Length: 209
Image (cartoon, one colour):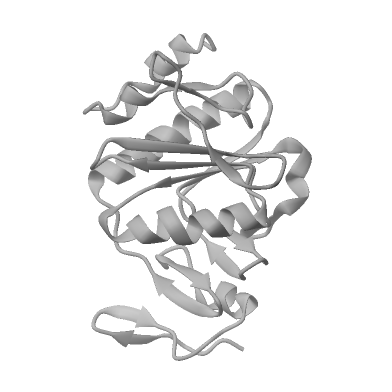
């Protein structure tokens, strides 16, 4: 049985280790944390720009996926349980292919999503670029995007035949082409525009409206 939360300096903190099942019982929708090696790891609040960028990426991916009947897209606060570390991560955006619906459980995803997007913040540089990179690679994520609006850098990795992430360059027009979502392409300079492009303009370029 999970113990009650205790408040420390305005934050809730769990006094000791817990199982994943206890973490699910203890946490709620407002718990901005991940579960790693049996410990609660608190996340810092996202900036307005990063939150806006996450919503943009989640929206365009969801429309593309729904239009092509490819599967499921989730944006923020969705727990992805990985047994290889073990950990329970909350990626910013995830895609799970329709044929892998069995990994969608009540309240979390059990296993590696097909595509994961992390929008990097100041305090998440090491976590997203190193810790999660290796966790996602080892767990079997097929495609991983790291987007850093502050430095205007987007990195795209696709899993090779040996199960390792390989960096994928943009084409000559500054466009990234997804492998997991066949036919999806992304103008990377969209990500640095402020305000971000209207959703309808992206969908028109993709010719799905």
